[in-house]
Amino acid sequence: MIVVTTPTGQIGRRLVRHLLAGNGKVKVVVRDAARLEADVRAQVEVVEGSHDDPAVLDAALPGAEALFWLVPPNPAAPSAHEHYLAFARAGAEAVRRHDVGHVVAISSAGHGWPKPAGVLSAAFAMDVELQRSGAHYRAVSPPFYLENLLGQLSAIRERGEFTLTCAGDQPLATIATRDVAAAAADLLTDLSWTGQSDVPVFGPDRFTPDDMAQVLTEELGRPVRYQRVTLAGFAAMRRSQGASDRLVADATEMFAAQDEGIYDADWAKATITATGFRTWCREVLVPAL
Ligand SMILES: NC(=O)c1ccc[n+]([C@@H]2O[C@H](COP(=O)([O-])OP(=O)(O)OC[C@H]3O[C@@H](n4cnc5c(N)ncnc54)[C@H](OP(=O)(O)O)[C@@H]3O)[C@@H](O)[C@H]2O)c1
Image (cartoon, rainbow, N blue to C red; front, side):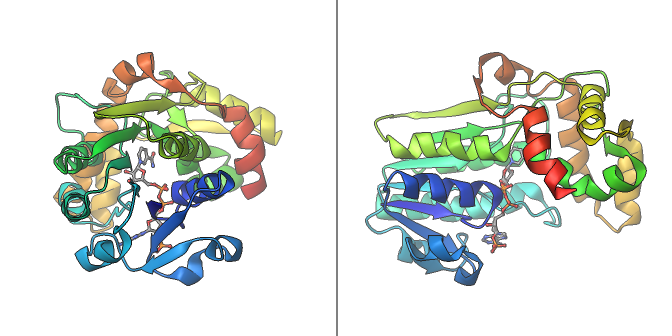
């Protein structure tokens, strides 16, 4: 039996469907079972609660062959590091208590980056903590999710632009979350792997944000441009919204590391996944618009 956290999230909900399609026995940990899709709800065992709660994990993990682990994003957490570690400590201790053999977690590309990288460093700290459990471990390590662009639908629709902090003329490493879920499903479906390592997974394109704007222009049939915002401009905007210095640093360190090439080493050796940006635009972004 495979225990899946965040079964209502972008990755978790697709992962559950992959596992069920392969006739896997699945137990999900979910805050509110009513948020599961009805057909999924009918096919899985459910433990209600949050996976940073040891009692919830004690209800979920007995008899588990493997655990899928994802720390929910919380951009309002006072410290990304503490947020990821609080979840990871609870997870690692429960994996030890219940002697779970295999853990597959969603981390980030960029392991080994020598400088602070904000939220990405927090994900790497999560890996270290979970590895201390002694379980066989894979850190599925993706770059920037294409789905992040869904937060900019109104800017694309109303102003014909999207905004990031990275250079418009440098390749931006991306991946579709459906492909992150598929990579996790592959690992959880065949548990013959051993040891602990990260698994970089990247989408097939090497598009710059300017290239992506061009694809969007073609797919939407109207002009879309890429608008770069400086890190200082981003930080000032977040401070004006009341974000703390730590919160601002968690984001700006991550964006700076992305611009300085934190993904490059992994990009050269990554498993390349199926969904290109143009396909993703046709199948996800355009319908959402
Ligand atoms: N965005 C990127 O570009 C990027 C790149 C690399 C790695 N990552 C990593 O990918 C992960 C995000 O994955 P995703 O996009 O699939 O997430 P998501 O769609 O935002 O899903 C979040 C999930 O967490 C659950 N959740 C929220 N708060 C919770 C809490 N306090 N306790 C327990 N469950 C909670 C939500 O369930 P409810 O139904 O209860 O709300 C939902 O199932 C993060 O760990 C992030 O570091 C992101």
